[in-house]
Image (cartoon, rainbow, N blue to C red; front, side, top):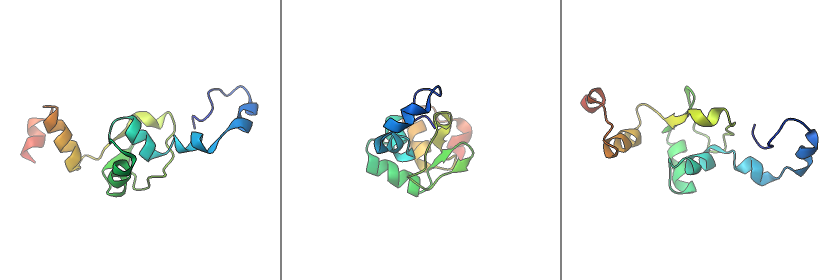
Length: 99
């Protein structure tokens, strides 16, 4: 899950706090990855279906993201927000501009 640094000892689990699990929530990950500026904005994006983790669209802001899956957090292909971000960064493909 990524809440303790190593797998060597279960003694580290005694010192786990609630905040370590809260840092693994999808809404918090979005703010850390700069997909959203504020936590409330990240929750709105998730609830509206703009975010996917791997191949699946996630609509639950409390979804726990493992460290391995953190690299696969992206915009949904049909998201208008993704299109605006690509336009702003001048990376919109000609094929995407037609649709």
